[in-house]
Image 1: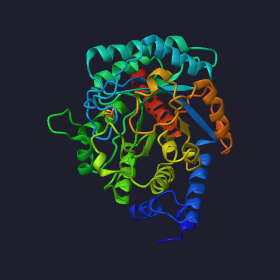
Image 2 (image 1 turned 180 degrees about the vertical axis):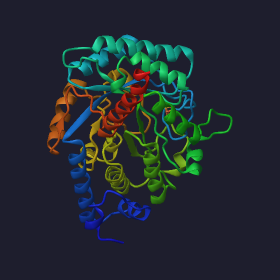
Image 3 (image 1 turned 30 degrees about the vertical axis):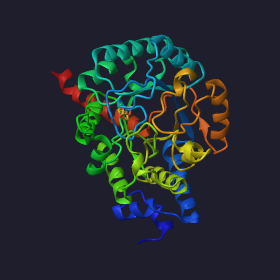
Length: 386
Ligand code: SF4
């Protein structure tokens, strides 16, 4: 194996090198990895951290992912659905406070009523958030699970702003056996890895900026599995990654497998963020809120390790307690205005600035778009000539 110093100057890595970097434990080595990822982020993405104001639209879900606190079969959770007016109110708050974009997240539903509700909300958000600062309205990330290609296309149309439209659909793990263990319960609506990958392909074809991600530290998951996850990010050619530690939930169906010890888990998660930055380069990476469960400064540490996106929670306080995908979820009582000011300070203390009123698209996406425009311009020439 090459020296760590040599490895960290590379831009292309073998599987063996990725596994080695993911497994670093020595404090000095981890600091070197962190610095390399931070510097690579500055070089490729600049110094901005972008906000995606998180709006947890509803905790009603038709799926039963075994690790999830709001899965359909957890009958101890009171279910809620925000109204369109509440959602638009949160989106306006985001736009008025300089957030370039928001993220609408909910449990998975495929019924026509829900599809139309989201379509209506998207139209209203676009109409209500256009301003001098945001001439195309606030950017939107959707995190609404597996849908048909027609639904993805329909929602993209309703967003009114395809240049600032993203979809986050994590595949959670590329290890089939582990995926099935996490997502299969007899006689329930079970998920399939191939279908999730098909959804990601449809999202690309519909023009979304494609985001995916995994859980880190799932009991039974190996460093080779995480390396395979990074390889799958590359294969998908992801524009953004949102990943966080595997955390237990009281409402889940998996208490018996436990959870990795907190110190090890945060180390592994930060290593995964840093290595993903080094391997994937000019993409967006979110510092997951779940990092804060393990360390009060978890999200800031995520930024130090190569993340450049943060998702402040804008969900009305009355609903937040009922949207707990994992236990001890932080920020359940934080008032959004107060919290945003503190967050800005904490980001700046890490040498970053907040990219207010900016879309915050990844360089990868911007280059993809540029190349697409050039290709379509080339394609247009013969048509015009004819
Ligand atoms: S992870 Fe998402 S789709 Fe699965 S049960 Fe939880 S909310 Fe539903």
